[in-house]
View 1 (cartoon, rainbow, N blue to C red):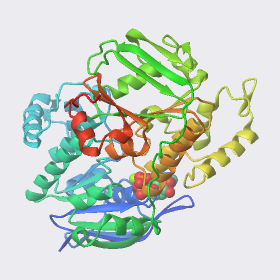
View 2 (view 1 turned 135 degrees about the vertical axis):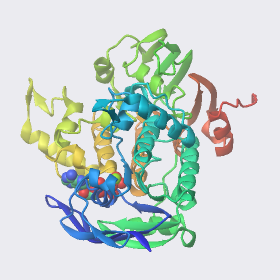
View 3 (view 1 turned 45 degrees about the horizontal axis):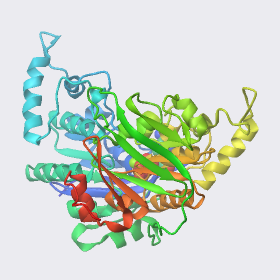
View 4 (view 1 turned 120 degrees about the vertical axis):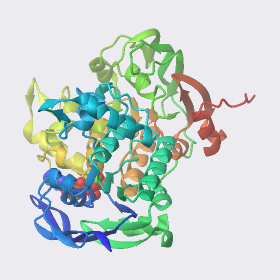
Length: 505
Ligand SMILES: Nc1ncnc2c1ncn2[C@@H]1O[C@H](COP(=O)(O)OP(=O)(O)OP(=O)(O)O)[C@@H](O)[C@H]1O
Ligand SMILES: [Mg+2]
């Protein structure tokens, strides 16, 4: 019997339809994957199930009985838990406080965290996580924040766990661990709904797959009866291949050089040690590594967000070691940050305002400190058309856009300003195949235009397909520098695990 049956679900935001008569049912005890292009309505459907978004129409049944789920409190009371696409950790609270939030243990009406600490610790150990309950949540990596959210959901004794794109922020290693955990939970009788754009993953984990397109249910089938090609076709209605770097372009002058750069020690961060590298115009340098090995710190050092202990940084021959982030940007460095909602966008501002943030000094957008509003709207419309941001609305706050479309806005802003170096961190994170192909094309176009690209990614295939050269980071050091054509996926995976390659001469 179905544990969940959603029937004829409709939801429209303003004039954007998100769900148009969706039927969705999940069998008890299965892992059910939900896939579909960016903006297909996956998150909306799950938010309706979890009581966060009221449907315009439709019925939900749990265990065969109609229910009304008004808010997340009723959802949790009915045994549902959700780990959101954009994690909802509160940075100032500790891990433990985040976990018990809304369900605080009290004695005689007084908060009593020790009671919870014991239970939470047991759960953390059972799950095989290494979470320090007293750490401030702001100091956790994205992977750790996700562990926190999973513990938080399970602490509430749920029987249906919804995970919205849990692997988008995880390294392959962490993804493997998460999947072991989810299979374990399934063995213990949990039902799991899982959203992902990574079709190979979906096929290896799920029992059943549902495909959505344009707010509609397309098909539900056993994972064993389909393959990634068929899924991609059902999702997009056409076949798409990701473009690759042909590595034929002649390289230009050196654009960026790091000379033995080390960062200052900061608790909770992997400091980088003695990093030297150089990138030339027309070159894509891939930075490979398991998340947390100093990649973020490297990028922060180059963009002026982290102070150096020693070493020097040169951009187009000029030293920029002590430039401020604004000066570095001004000099021609753009940056797609890995955490789009924390660093890349201001969620409550509109698409136009978010695009504007990158053009504060740009004469096309402002004149002597006054916005050229008409011009801004025009530029903004051009950009959202070029980058195919859906829906094509300039005044809607960015927080209401689907994850993939938010990412396209970041790209649009960063690529549309004068620059000689693009630092792209996880640029295709959370994007569907068509959008990822578009991003890949943009990166290759940067190369063709003789600009330099520093591509930081934990996806092996992304690094291998796009880079000219690759450096591998491990515990804050560069442990290998290789021509991309000279290495395969297995070797690169081993290097990322810290196993150094034998020297090639
Ligand atoms: N609160 C909101 N206000 C306005 N529009 C919204 C809101 N939430 C979602 N939408 C729109 O509804 C559509 C479906 O969005 P949803 O987030 O469900 O997509 P998704 O399938 O999860 O996509 P992604 O893979 O990019 O996360 C999108 O066009 C989105 O812009
Ligand atoms: Mg989504």
